[in-house]
Length: 142
Image 1: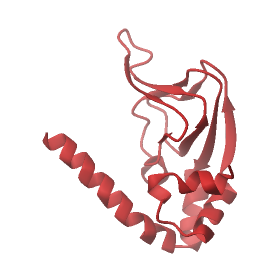
Image 2 (image 1 turned 30 degrees about the horizontal axis):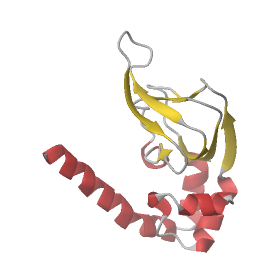
Image 3 (image 1 turned 135 degrees about the horizontal axis):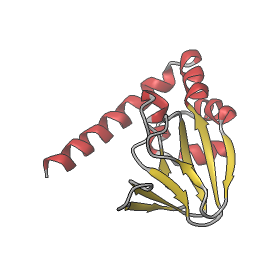
């Protein structure tokens, strides 16, 4: 599967045209992580988005503390760090490879560069971001 096709599977990019997906794919790269590798570390600056192409990883809160808590497991088709493309905040959890894992990686710098030259990408993403915010608010209300 091409990086363009991989990005098309990400809900955040689901409304983008093939042309815009192709533009984003130019800045994306494939990265390999071995079993046990830390993909992202809680507290680090969040500047990269990840899409899991193969393998699996676990999301852990407090990984370096005395009582780490596994928040979930990620597998092929899952993604994380999408908000890093927009807000540049610190990572809220550690993600560690449970086995050999391949990810498609897109940096905030490459993403913002494409937004500057093609603002239609942002316009196409706004409904998806709004829907995700509504879903998060609904979860908090229950």
